[in-house]
Length: 308
Ligand SMILES: Cc1cc2nc3c(=O)[nH]c(=O)nc-3n(C[C@H](O)[C@H](O)[C@H](O)COP(=O)(O)O)c2cc1C
Image 1 (tube, rainbow, N blue to C red):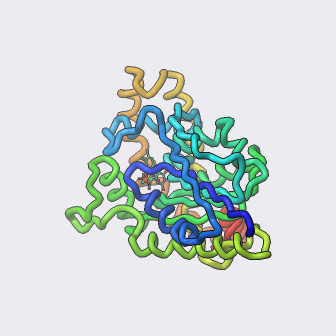
Image 2: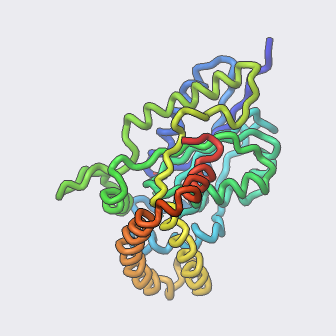
Image 3: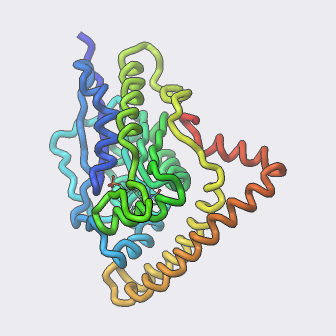
């Protein structure tokens, strides 16, 4: 009898959304007697609050952007030495992988589990994941892992509505729909259920002679690149980086100076989003005939490895 294929699912979710997406992907694999599935929760030793108090929410950005990590409480007792495939689920915090995920990626265990191993990433976030994907790609290269797939699910409400609905959800714990026509926050149930097909594709590869490589999720609509977000993500991520240094110089998230700084930053951030995103989208539209080739290259870059 063929030895069972070993699959590891790395996960962390505050509201349960990302876990539901991963459950949908993994369901097809769990039904396969030839596949053994292990889970490792990337649980922070000191849990992050949900719902988030506003100032604490803002104060999470320097540690997210600079990927300083946090202490993790991992239960590694059931882990095997190596896996045939690893699924890394992550959500985006401030255009970077969430703090527990980046803490894991920076640790020794990540190298042990991911080196020379095919990895697929599963993202569920509001809608700005390009820079986080860039960071995770770099981690994969550093760790010697083989990133062979990436899929991203985003909030169903669209850019403008989710600018309100996602923070409302995270700050109140109520997913909506809200008053004044603000739709429900988060990824749609239909998209979550549809994610099962990505697990089916993995299952098919694990059981076939075909190599488990970058083609596994190609042609499946694994990601959608909203190119108008490319410049805003780039600029915002630079700004987060610089402000983040200032915050970190004031001490940890609970340092007294960081509270007033967070209030100032909140005002700056809202102003920046309300101006920068539409202005950069407008400029992009105006110059798009000149930038067509460059935009096509960028789309291809960010869509790698699975494509749109
Ligand atoms: C502190 C924080 C920052 C976030 N920043 C972003 C972001 O930059 N881009 C984005 O698309 N979503 C962002 N989100 C939304 C998350 O990616 C995710 O959709 C939401 O937190 C639900 O994830 P969960 O599975 O952990 O519950 C942020 C969430 C939190 C808590």
